[in-house]
Image (tube, rainbow, N blue to C red; front, side):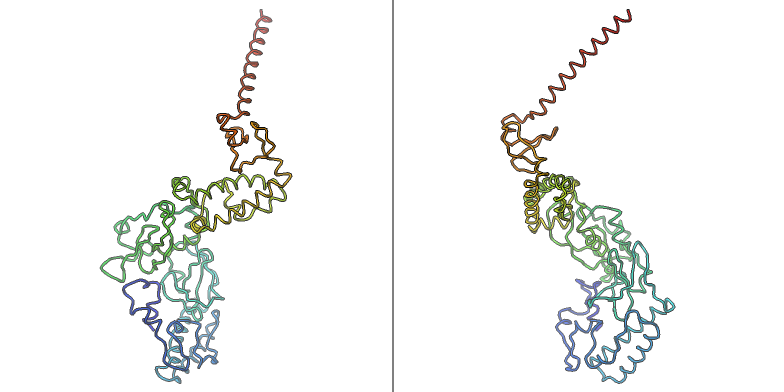
Length: 440
């Protein structure tokens, strides 16, 4: 049992200090026909052997001190009456230990559980209705036995911890960190070395050394800092800096803090690709196409916002990609790499274009080409049209090239401005002459 729990703990995952290979633990099963259970099921805190399933030993996570003490006494009697070395006795002994741990939790707080706790930027709430899945404490990396041990979860970053660990946590809430920073780390693994950290874990301050396998440092590829096994569970994630600079989507090992930060900010538009690495548009054709479609959506948004019927087409995807800040989220870049965003944008632009061209209000705000005097209505998002940067007049690309890339409206405005300035100068000189004559 101890070997199975040690192997399953995230602290020892992908480590050389496991008590035994995990494959042997998973494949091994009980030979007993009564309450037969595999090693995976025996580690499940919600599993009860069939032979004692009707004893009603399970207690609610909000049980009082008296209820837990009654369950402990009942469990002791069942342990003494159960056969030696049986699966039933093994489960009862483990459950008895869990009940005593739960009782110690209640004694530490005079029998009262705190429903909400605020510490280090976290907003913890006691877990009541917990899904049937394993959870690990982010502070001590131990298993959270949900049935008998009270635990908390942060409503902002999903930080999970035991009730007894909540007052000792040292990690600031990942939601607070990313909200204050407002951007991803854009340097590829900015490693500074253990000496810069005084050979201590960047989070909890545990001494690190390569000579001891228990305190061997683990590098976080996102922050470039070294962490201990309790703060670094060898979680894998894509690194934003590697994507923006190299378009590298290979997953790297990161710490728990970095893992929570990336999960929280995965859908937030923090990446300005145009300023960080503008050459990436020439390297990735799909990204360049999406960047052009975002410019078209920006113009479509101006038409649709002024139309009562077109405002219903402003979907969440349209609002995200039609924004003027031109920033991307990691979810957008991942969708571009998978090819799903291109399909969604194509469908979205076709629907918006159909409304603008067929709506009387929207189509009335189109442009006509002055060169060819064609009745075809032009829009800023048309591929065959070009807009003057100064006066926003629209021309066909062919007509624009025939006129030597000169805007007819700008030429008229310049001539009118010159004429106005000349007339103003003549008027001023005439007034000055009349005043001088009057003074004499």
